[in-house]
Length: 106
Length: 119
Image (cartoon, rainbow over the protein chains, first blue to last red):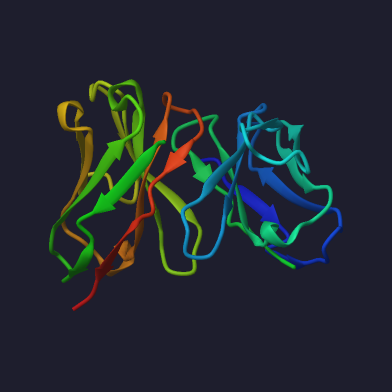
């Protein structure tokens, strides 16, 4: 199985800050990396697919990058509504696996 | 709009069984593959099982293979998860989620149903 490692596990930042979350795969996954946002008590929401393509309706302050084993999710100007836990997920091979999550606090 | 509503969760004793359902609306259910994904209390996400749009292909994660069975009824826009031989470590919120095909992102998720396995 491909193991996904996210860092940091949590962070605290201020409104307007630039925030970057890292996700590392245990082997190359090309660009088959997706990001999800989960707010407390709610289901995850699909944000980004194939490492860098924003899902329709996702604010442009979100961006993704990376290839192979190292990926990033960046929020260019943190907003209060971005307080959530973010998960990466590889869709390169069976079984699909998720990172452990990064909790972003404002 | 796309809506997925899970039901069937509850309290069950170790070794017991439970059947989860996911009612879909707002999209052409038979065009989409479906998966079950769970989240233990305070933990991350774990993919459990996948079924193709026609129901002809199914995959399972190692932790549930041989104990859980995924199925669907396209005529009733419904997805199911039969869970047998339940263990305390199966305690989690169970989500159903759509994807256009295997190894594609989970684009829509239900709100989840809580399964508690405890004596």
